[in-house]
Image 1 (tube, rainbow, N blue to C red):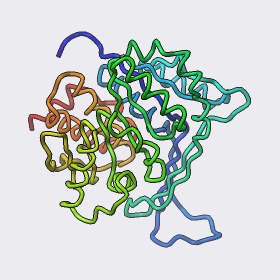
Image 2 (image 1 turned 90 degrees about the vertical axis):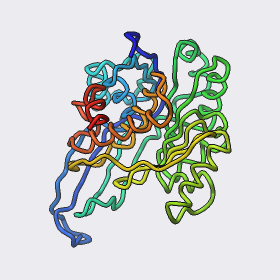
Image 3 (image 1 turned 180 degrees about the horizontal axis):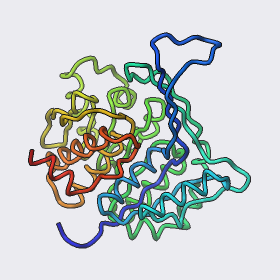
Length: 311
């Protein structure tokens, strides 16, 4: 590895993340139910930005926060981990975005709500006025919370300056926003539902999921990844494809593992790793995140990931 920090531009959502886990199988409607409630910082793009910074990248993060206490605290946290936020927008009189995730006793996601409307304050004009950030970036990472005009501008500027774009579809509902740009995406990290939304077809079994990853690669995605949680992932490029198992981990909290995987894959690729090794680095990052209670594992580092890879 060289000593030069890789320049990453990350654009997308950030906000308060509330996790609620029920303490019993029975949920009583209209009653107060016992549960474990924790909060932290979230937003897919924000999580990727922090993971990249912890891996050693020089990260410029463009997001929108309210001018409330949550926004101030989130900015302070980002600064504390080395993420640059000078280009981010502070929206006067607005509340910082938030999400709430409700989990059942067996850790299956029960239901989630999010309010990331502020992300749409990232306009085409705002991005154009900061085109220098695109010119200076080595890689761009985005989530699908961005508006259609913002996405169009991002891909236009990235193409103008020859910078690869890595995208996380975020949810099955938002994933179709990326469909017009599949042939311009260098890395796509999706789960099965998001991949189905992008492809417009069901992927009922492992063989179908592998074919789905290959189809995404045929549509122009440089490296298409479809994650399967504890079962690992399937990936495809124009030249290779396959399945990789997940690394063993004693799961403390599953939230954030996907963003850790995405960040580490991106970092591996800009380091010059071949796709297979970059994906393995991503799986190591996901495993490291699973053993932490925080959405972004504070002990994440390249050294720890390399230790997992040689086990």
